[in-house]
Length: 331
Image 1: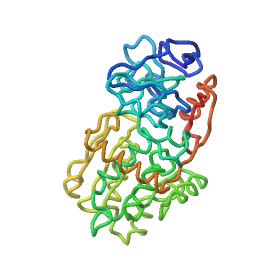
Image 2: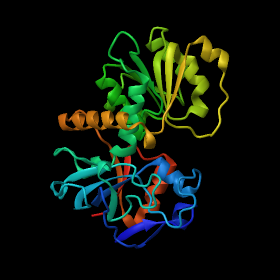
Image 3: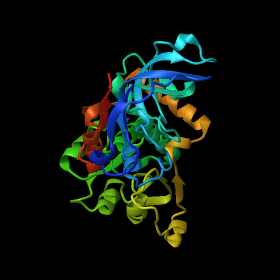
């Protein structure tokens, strides 16, 4: 099969190669998906670049965790009824050598989730990391966001792939949603996702704006994309008893101001979508499937590249210039 791969980490154009690799066959409890699209996420880019150790020690890596396509083979123990099923996949290259930047992928059957009929393959390739991260983050941020508590949510990086879905899931739970962005174009994008108020952190005082927009209450929850940079600003806007849900950080360390955290009775919740509890993942998938079937969610495809331009796709994600999801077309 045709695939993109790398044998060492580094700059995308230097290390990514296109070539033929053996076509995988499903084993017991596994399925094979003929992929239509592969999703490119920041974690894929960091792994290829060597800034995270997810690919360490592997002799050859086919990158990317997310994708969508059609089940074309099943292994022993998997019903043949699944043949021909339209699916989206998650954790394609998590603790594995071969991800979704290829014509085929073999995975445990439970990692291929049926796509509702109205959801396209392009949209399906956006779900694994961005949508699941957003759903779990909102779940942690405010179990009862539609009740008398946890009604005000701040999404840091509201124009990012995760932020875009987080705004939507918080709004679906009835929250009053604020979002931070870095440009007017991104502000319009966050608004289109359903943000009630958008703050441009480059030109506005975020703390002052949040206080004004919440009548000095602050926010009950923050969904945080860059904990190491935003911890102190988050505390400036967090209401007493509030929670910060952390799904990302640019640095591996942060100094915790313990007196401020204790004074706020604040909660810090850290999450990593790849290995969340099985029960929680099942809840997230069930909810996501329902919202997709009901047409509740907006998806944004920023750019679609052919497989032989995968390095350009990685550069687009790495630059932060793409508004929406970046995909690789495989069919």
